[in-house]
Length: 254
Image 1 (spheres, one colour):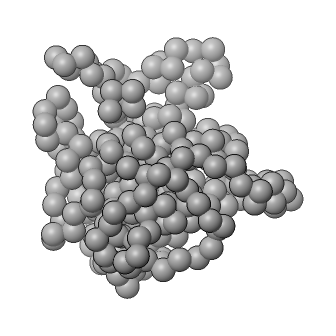
Image 2 (cartoon, rainbow, N blue to C red):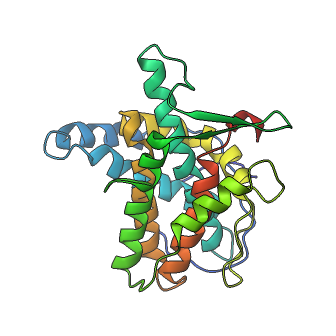
């Protein structure tokens, strides 16, 4: 789907256009050394500085990669960010378990379907996704409200629908929101983008607990930039419609 990430970090305005995304290949950029210096200088005063800088860098790379001659398709951008943020909640728990010498599946309740696929559940995963002030939901919903959203989507309904769709063709297919469809399903964005962005997120955020926070800050930044192109409550719904199911999946099975 994506051929490469390219270009220097810079602010780019979101435009609602049809997307033909260019995909992702990991590139080592000289700017990263400067970013690491900035993070180290500010880390003591702001423990979240790596996640904040990481969020800006992730968004910049995604927008560069998804941009065509008509701009960036914002529905696809929020779907991709949501998919990455959701899976980051699972990945950070796996990384923590491995660091403690535990089985990477130890933090989860694992459900296996007839087709052999595994899906992951449990309170630690839900906490990173939707509880606490640094959860994906809290960061994204806060940004939506800041940008004028008067109503928020029913996240409990999303969780229930995701669980009920496990093992069916409906799993991971977002509800169509007022005609605002992304260019691809969340799984396609996750499969293509996660491997390309993980080294950058690891480098800038450091602590695995901050991996979902990186994407949460990227979502906040995207909402600030795209508020004139897409109503924030719709951006939030697109984000969580992707984040919740992608937090449950086995990446290798996508």
